[in-house]
Length: 343
Figure 1 (tube, one colour):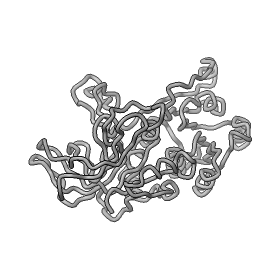
Figure 2 (cartoon, helix red, strand yellow):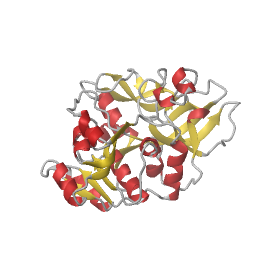
Figure 3 (cartoon, rainbow, N blue to C red):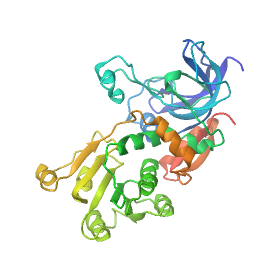
């Protein structure tokens, strides 16, 4: 297979290059060498390569953390896997030793290694990961463009576990990017009475409507008034901010006794809130960060066809053309871009 491979490396600020680099090797007894089939571009990848940079990253790192591939080699202590099996990678590597990890909050580990940002990721022909981060795909026939979305879906599932969702709930999703569309599919699967999605882009509106949800354009409509009109004046039982920084909007259209989930990240955005509004209306607010014990469930959901994800992946490029993938996202042409690393 040779000692070199192609990989997308963030050399320095805004300088992403496809280079010939050393192929990774098995170094530890629990390592697994994966031939990467494909890797999806995440919004955080866009932030990492932006100028100025909007996401922490170590330069000269192979980017990419949403990927699927086949096992080609394993360390001596690896068990439960076989050569040739298709697997998906759980990218965030917690230390397992700190107080956060020991208390079950592995996603809050202060020593966590973020694959694709501080630890070489999957936008390459090969990747080595410890077996603790590798999950088997039981149904090997599932399309790669669906399985590759396991990581973002796991993040969404992890957040939904914090909510008390009931059949017939009125739900509002703020944002219709890949994450917003995943929430839309899952809330429909939960049996939501209505799912209202706030979206401006025409391409994203079409994707939302194809999922059977109701579109509201915040640039044209008053969100609060629109939601009240769609919910008999009650407001939404569940409101999810997929964008980040939209807590004021989320609370404004939330029903008495409703729940707000803050999922999107926007460190710079400030919100003006009156705590009395939360107390008087008994609104619960929760936050959710990356994943925690949700990868196996995400794989089950994909294999069972509970979510189709077909409307999310709109563009596929070869690794050599990765810049075209990022450009399609920046131009608003794409919803989700997948990069083929091996054909």
